[in-house]
Length: 456
Ligand code: PFF
Image 1 (tube, rainbow, N blue to C red):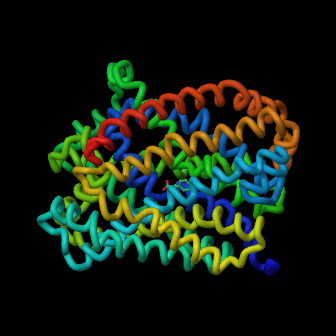
Image 2 (cartoon, rainbow, N blue to C red):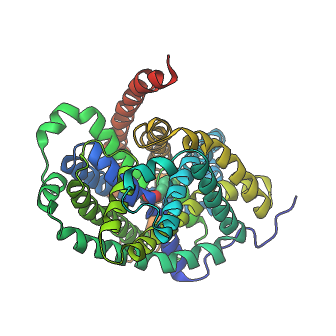
């Protein structure tokens, strides 16, 4: 089948690229995953490590994806083949697989968010925020809203990059920032805000000494997940660029916005959790829903705030989901000459099926299936994808990557060289260590909690 010229579109305006990248980065990772990981991994120590990973590893890694994408004008599979030659093409398959895995459960969690939009309108969770979550997080409701969310994602991706993504993100980003700021101010007035800030902001280093084996890979995985790096989203977006823009400045903007949204989310989630009496160490994947719904039920005009908050949150999740599906769909278009609409539909169905066990078998007290998918995706697969790209770029294609980074930067000086050397040794070594820790941790989960769950 031949591919129509509009199937591979480019950005309509200068801001389109950055909007889409921010839209991809800001999502469930910031508002759902970040507080849930921070709560589970010891609070402020995790936050500090996460910030280090974002700056020292996330920034160089995003530059790796941007330079490869703009240089080759292709998605991860094509870009890997072109940058590295023959056998690297097969490694590109890893990125497509990661896309399938992430979106399959991402859509389930985003389905919970959609369900809460409805719940805010009907007042369904008022006075029973905990049982409400347990009711809707698994079973028929979860499956139905998982299907709705996936269908929305397919629809937008089928329309193509130009119309869908840019519009959604232009509205979403300022709105999310506004709502999050308003919630930070509200949470500041809560009775237990002080203890919560202490937990969230003042690191207890003794935890690092005892639990570094799980805190370190969790922080690295969160940095990759939140910045959307390690599966070729940023490669794909940069492949639609034809102009000489300053990729370093763009990276700075994207990372700053994404990290700010996550950090601010923590500033309101923990005061709400502490005030609601939910232990920070075991919030699990449902805590943010339970705590926020409880808070919205308590405040004046709470259902309006609830609709606005969960509505914004749903749009943020949608723009991230679109970016994940775009990688898979543009792979079909580029490598097999597939038709965009049909590829989007088939991909959506496959991802929906893969997410079904999470929708049917997860609950707040039993987050086994979320962990099974999510830890594998973030801590193992995204980090592996990042390592593959970094080895390729820093060791095999360094000259081309540096030349690409220079395009659009006025006086780059030694910067490209510093970047390549940072990636070549320290970044790759640190990531290999976190990967090894993550594999060990995941293995104990599989043979421990997961085996128990299966009754083995
Ligand atoms: N960054 C998104 C979020 O924080 O919700 C999730 C995500 C998108 C992860 C794209 C990975 C990815 F490639």
